[in-house]
Image (cartoon, rainbow, N blue to C red; front, side, top):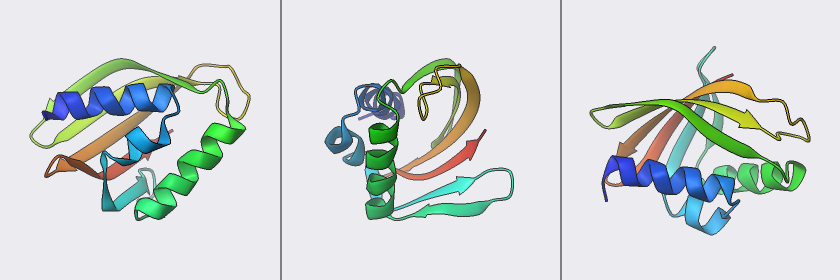
Length: 112
């Protein structure tokens, strides 16, 4: 699977709220960081899955739309609009940097 395919599947699974499909793309030791201060927000697949389950429950209309993507080596930078988070339908911009190793997402840095 190419990095492009991994990101396409991840975005589709996110928008369809398919936890099982999403989690199949993440490594067991996935780390998610807040980009602004580089604090570790999520440490491991179990925490990541719990976060997405809660997010999808609280945000039934959650949707992400890619504005621009940059592929560089094993990293992907996505500039996207996200709407429906916690019931707020306003489109908000965010940037997510994905790092992919051995066909699994191993790290995400999120800028909001």
